[in-house]
Image 1 (cartoon, one colour):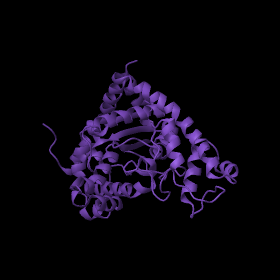
Image 2 (cartoon, rainbow, N blue to C red):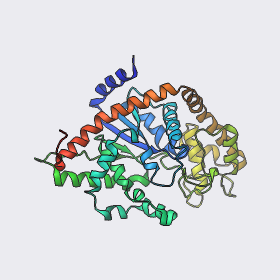
Image 3 (cartoon, helix red, strand yellow):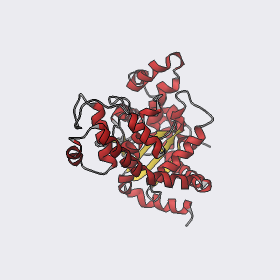
Image 4 (cartoon, rainbow, N blue to C red):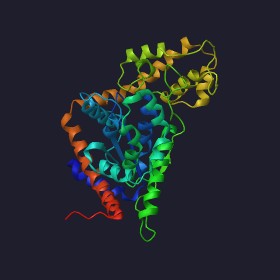
Length: 350
């Protein structure tokens, strides 16, 4: 069966399911935090929802970026998604910039969103301090683009980490403002989405600082384990990760954030319960524990890495997935965009 035909049939079958929408910026390589906090969760729940997952390349240029690798990073992420288990029978994956409705709706929402709503965004304040005078309008405004991303697809649920809850609340506020000002006969223009927050493993912390989130933007690659790291690299990073001098490893000690983070990683990657890991590691030292964590990490990532390399050797297939994904996404997004433009009073195309 041709991919396009199959996806059209899938779209019809998924109409009765609630819709989930999420995306990841195409900057740098995906790491364990991205996988455990987002991708793995999507894989686990995808059969229960109509899923739209996109590669946020428009968001990627809100900070200084390398134009030479943006396209390659986007393609690699598509391969990682598929290698991680994203199933095209219930999920649509696509590139954000391949659907022009994202940019157009963002502009319409810009004209409705008060400036002070954006100025209070915590992530903007943090990133603006780092960038100084080079901070862009795009960095201030990207929560509006994020709102457009979500609202275009009438998403019911949006998987978010704790650090993104404020942006989803902004999306809900923008949708409410549009509905209040431009809804007709008590009919909403935009669907107001709900957050979907994964409790376990949703916030994976840095290997070099257990109080900070694992991040692609951290200048030290020792702070994160990337999904495509070799076994030797994984071993080196875990061997050098920050620990403490206390023997006996325990969860939930506020004085030992690195200990809690590494135990949590081991628990998730080895598919054990928290109680089981607590008992297993309660008398261990770091020299005994780190090889266990290394082995669990290597084994968990090997199937993903093997499938990734297989996909990257089939460029034609990847291109077809993204082409069909953009087509399916556009068919939904353009309907929402037309609905918003009509509500705002625009003259329809002649």
